[in-house]
Every structure is written in structure tokens, then in C-alpha cells.
Image (cartoon, rainbow, N blue to C red; front, side, top):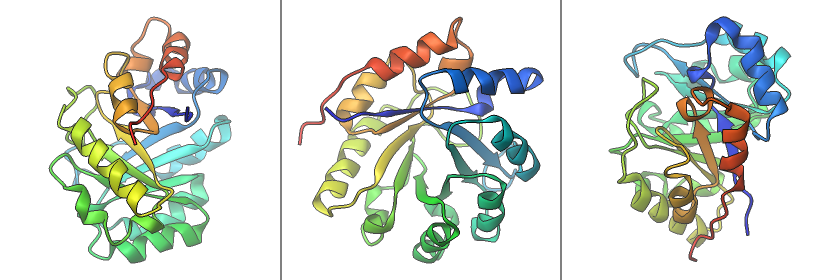
Length: 223
């Protein structure tokens, strides 16, 4: 039975109580803290940047999983690593030289992740999968929190898992968007390793209990 990871998404937190929300994640059974960076160009929204990440890094006791939903992410890899990122994920759609960017991330000392939009097929990663530490499968269209889960993500996740196994890659599969108690078990059965949970955690009456419930699911991928 493999252990999966839970990464609460800070985008869904109460920004007027950011220190308290981060402390909640610190106390919880969560494994990572997910940090979304949006530039208003690659996605139709703007979120956090480097200065906020530096502050979050000082408060968080969990590894910080930084998701760059930005154009030209290669220009900012070193800066986000220096600001506190432990995992840096870039979008395949934003990287014309994806192999180079993956290695740039790894050379910075961070784990290298690649995200795929809902319409992007997994076979785009065939020639780089062995170099990737994390594949983030977007289960909503990126740019906004609180969207409905796209159920085509389930067969896509299974297909990706089979690619990872056949290539002997060590990449983890992360699911981001619309994840909660209602679909966590199905995602784990499809092959997911990391669940990003935003509104389902920070919008819950008892966020720590919700994280505990998400961690408690047990699912075996059918190899």
C-alpha cells in the first residue's frame, strides 16, 4: 500500500488570516503546502509572487510546492527556488524547451514538476518522463479556484501512471483542481500520488479533520 501526499492549496485560504491558515497546515497531517503563481497572461488571473513566497517560507514547516502558471517560467526558476520553493512545476504548454527547463529546475536544487492542462495529452511527456519528479494533472482549467472537477482526469491519470511504470520513471502524479472527499479515493485508484486540495480544505468547517480524512483513504492502483 503506497502512501499518498496531501497538499492544501494556499489560494483557497483566508488571506486576512494567512499566518493562522499556514499554522493550521503546519499542525495538520498535510505533507506539502501548494502555492499557485499566476501571471494574468498564461492564465486569466493574478495571484502570489516572490515576496509573498518568502514570507510563507518563514512560516511554513512543510515543503512548498510551487506551481508556476506563467509564461517564460525559465526566467524565474532560480528566483522562486531562492524564495523558498522545494518543488517547482512549470506548464508543458508554456515551455518550448521543456527538457532544458526541467534540468534548470533540478540544477537549482528543487524537484522538477511538469503540469498538463486538461486538453493536453500525456504522450507529450514521453521523451522527458524519466527526468521529471512530478507530473501535475490539471483537473480543472487553470486560473481560478473552486471549479468543478473534470472527470476525464481519471482515465488520463491511469494512462499517465502506465507510462510512468513502463518507463521506470520515479515521477509522482499530482492532481490539482476540484479535489475533495467525494473523489479522492477514485483518483488514488487511478494512480494519483499527490492530491492538491483547496476549497475542500480551507472551506471546511474543520480543515484539519478534512486533511486527516483525505490522508486516511487507502487505494491500490491496479498494476
